[in-house]
Image (cartoon, rainbow, N blue to C red; front, side):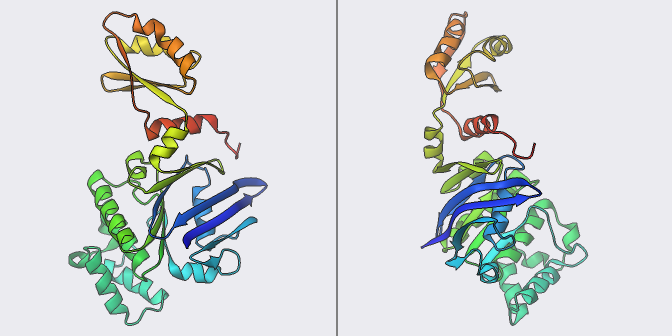
Length: 305
């Protein structure tokens, strides 16, 4: 059984369609990355899946419960981590978790808190005020609160925004440990390296689902070709090829220039004069997930404008 199976989700606010016919499947024990630009409908979709918003159209099941009629059951079995740190900063870590344990009517609350502190490596900081924590430790507290009631599904909305690379890696190691234990995870992110750590990804842009699959499948399905240019005066090269037919993206990467396009013959024609420049080498490169992300963004229209 899939942990998430939703079809044709639509959500409107004030006459604007924020989520437009979105369908998604997430298998049990799977980690799925949810990608898309700001304002693309990721948060609204996640809130519909966890029972906080009722879709205007569409149907589906989350953990076997009907999205429309079993919202309360879904809430009890889902852990939802919001973008913003939302705990009491003048309470300690343990006090915040005790509050959450009582919300879920966990008894004895002290045992649940102690177990969660141990699992997330927070025991030595149990008496520290939440407001004094760094971004990485706040993130860990938020995750602890999400998993304390032992949910079957985690919905994480840009959970690593604003934390350092070490904290991000530690967080993802924890997510994979939880998934290995059977937990299902849907996580929205803007970080390409995080998306590549997911089993599959789904890309939404301005309310519409554009692609889903493994990273390799999404990159292959984009139809993009990338060339890498080495040589002198790459600023002049960039100016020469930008805007030419077949050239969709031009971006410097260190001492090289990456040129990306969806029409191979037109792209080859645009780069032909560059190959004649003294000391310049044009070679086939590997299209990245970021290239695909940028291409999707450029081809999409803002549904709120």
